[in-house]
Image 1 (cartoon, rainbow, N blue to C red):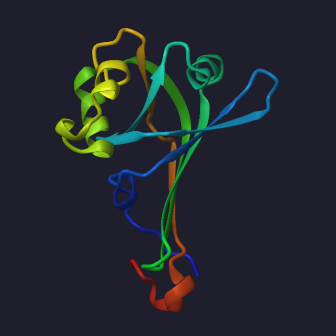
Image 2: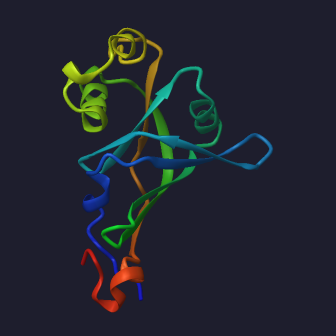
Length: 152
């Protein structure tokens, strides 16, 4: 009862992604991240001292899961991406586009956030770059509508 859909439908939304990486001992680790999808590349925020960045520098294998769930509308879309990630210097322009995706225009941002977190020129900023080896989608939006799907 699952149907594929264009992954851009989910990747363009301001949803949380879950980034799965591998720890030194082989154990899985999972972290929620903001992301931006541009020209077939998934970019996620990172920091030079961040644990996800450190794990990916040791072992670039990762998986990313993104779910769009709207209970009232009967929508449940799942998008998964797999492949090796690289750690890149942050592009201030891309970092800003990512923040705008989630937060809207800067005039609505808190001054503390702008001064402390949203420093697009901070040399510690990194971006996790995933060019997926595989992308899969599942539309399981039939829980309210049956086989008609809420979002087909």
